Every structure is written in structure tokens, then in C-alpha cells.
Amino acid sequence: MQRETGVGIEAHNSYGAYRWVGGAATHAHETVAEEVPVALVYNGISHAVMLATPLDLEDFALGFSLSECIVGRPGEIHDLEIIERDNGIEVHMQLSAERAHILKQHRRTLAGRTGCGLCGTESLDQLAKRAATVQSSAVLGAGALPRALSELQGMQHLFRLTGAVHAAAWCGFDGAIDLVREDVGRHNALDKLIGSLASQRRAFDGGFVLMTSRASYEIVQKAAAVGIAVVAAVSAPTGMAVRVAIDSGVTLIGFVRGERHCVYSHPERVH
Image (cartoon, rainbow, N blue to C red; front, side, top):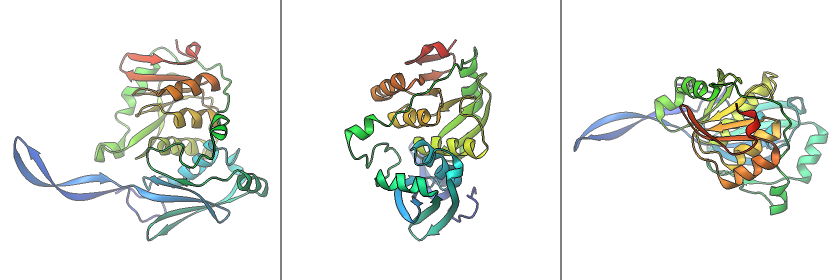
């Protein structure tokens, strides 16, 4: 079983089930991904509660803080502690005084679901102002997307066990993958990836993201917020994601399937 350091809740568990094949049922034990409420608490105040896989929660908290522009750099989080409760997990973070003041002024409360990207946004004006602008001369090498897709299939460890989680992969511009994070929520997986990159002091302009999901608004917004210039997904984008990608300078690629893909914005980065 995989565990997050310091957290006793499993990322997956075994459950009894009846498996039907050819009209006959047999009793089996199925491995099922877990999702638990994870409260992100800043300076003692709960800011967001998300349903997430209880794995890589330090990465998740840091990545969420960066992609939601709660902090501008990892050093503005002075302390991070994970506390297991009877009904979920709390991640307590202590912000710098300046960031705590900014958060208090713009605070929102999220009642998070695994597929939710806009819960708690206070107004349409707030939503429209969230996308950052990415400046990058990055270029994907020939064959980068097929290579990344092929490598990712062997690196989705929790998905192989459960079939129930998304993955976000960090790929070099030649398509080589060196980091993968998984979660029941696609945007949670991306936050975990962003947090891991930030904790390793990796440059966000040094590669691209490949998602095993559709490309929705929050995926593009989170990438743009930290300066990731290229986002690729195995499934379709939404119209809102395309518009945000165009406006924020992100190259958005969908339907990455072997030698096929579709580029929806800023195609100059794909050769």
C-alpha cells in the first residue's frame, strides 16, 4: 500500500466485489482508489476543502498555493504540517504576513469536488482576471508527444492498480518524462506536479505537461499561473479552455493519440 509520509490513510484499499464474466459471477477482491476531504488551512483559517487522493499532499498543498496565486514562491510558506482527522485530513500552512493579508482580502471558500474548478469563485469579474500571461519561446521536438504518451503508460502506478485516477506528467521538450503525479481529480494531479517541481526548484519553462484527462479551464489556468507554456491532454479541451489558452499565451494540445494530436492555440511551439 502507498502512504503519504505522516498520514495513515491509504491511497488505495481492497474491497470485496462480484466480478461477472460471460454471465457467471465470482467473488473477488478489487483494488479501489481512495478519495478523502483535504482541507487547506492558511494561518489557522480553512480556505479550501478538496476531495483528493491522500498521496503527495505536501506537493498538493504547495502546488495549489502557487497555481491559485495564494503565494508567488515556495518561500512564502513558512511552515507546513499535515494532520489526520477522523473525517479527513488538514494541511496547515503558515504564510508570510504580506501573503496572509492578501489572502484575507481576496479569500474565497471552496466546497471542492474532484471535477470542480470554479466552486466558490465570487464573481464573473474575478474569474475573468485569473488567467496569467505566459511568454515562452519553447518548441516541442518532433516526436515529443508520441514519446511522452508511450512513456506515461508505464508510469501510472496507481492507475494500474485501480483504474480510477488521472495523471499529470512533466515532460522534456523531447518527450522524455521524469515526473508523474496521480490523483482522483485531474486538477489535483496537476497541483501535485506543480508543487513537486517547485519544491525541487525546477523551472516551469523547462518542459510541458501531459494530462490523462480532458483539458478544462482550470488545467490551463493553473499552468498559466506558474508559467507553463504547453499543456497537452489525451482527450478534448473545452471551449473555455481554448479561449483562456489563446488569451494567456498557452499552447493547448488535445487528442494526443499516438502520432495524432490537435493544436488549439499558439501552434508556433509545435513543430
